[in-house]
Length: 347
Ligand code: BGC
Image (tube, rainbow, N blue to C red):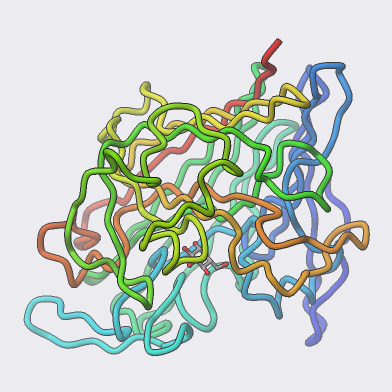
């Protein structure tokens, strides 16, 4: 189903599409940013509620740096000083986060109008072309993202990208979840479990130090289901630097899409989100920068830590960290990745 979602300041029309399944679950998406605008899932009592943060109109998406629900590209998270070398050649990317490049730059994929491809009742495909030199990246990049909702309440997100010159690619999805469905509340009453024994510590500008560290014995250890409110304000240098969780976890699943990467539970409503990915990393971001009480859908002011993100990815600053998996996409190769979000109920 296609609806108008208003327009941008320059008159560009934005559309909204809804996928539904036999369980009454609805996922709504925008062609702006290939954004997940809302996900309606039932609680234990069968009550449907929207569990993602978002804006009421297109212009708010265009102006915001929250990345609500958007597909991020070309490169998720930060690249130090926006600089990297490829085949001995230096490149300078747009700097949009202090001295660093974040989430694809000033005009990342979250701000682009995507072309809508095949649409069915339960799936939609978006695509875009990122021109050679876009935000400083080499090569013309062709990107597609396909969302598919099945009758077991699983939303799959499938990314593809090809290039005509060697370049960097690291695509992710930046939805903020609040499983309570009460979007004016924080996620501190959520239990988070991340199946990762290691993570990549950061410096004060949230750039990885390059170390791959063990989570053991620290507040970063979420290998057991952990109530966020119990741990997020622990005296821990990494949590202090980020104002909470904003860290790349090195997933134990290591590319195996059949092994869960993370489980988030909201005990009060019974809603559970289980995430699977074939990528090696996942940024767990606890909405620390939502401090300005951003006003979203239904006029709701989102508090700090009002949503949490589980961003499947290659590691931040990969092009400058020789010991991290490479984010180089070679000409002739296809960047292909799948993330699965499975919604269920705990009794
Ligand atoms: C990053 C945060 C950043 C946020 C922007 C997250 O993916 O890890 O550091 O502030 O996106 O909303």
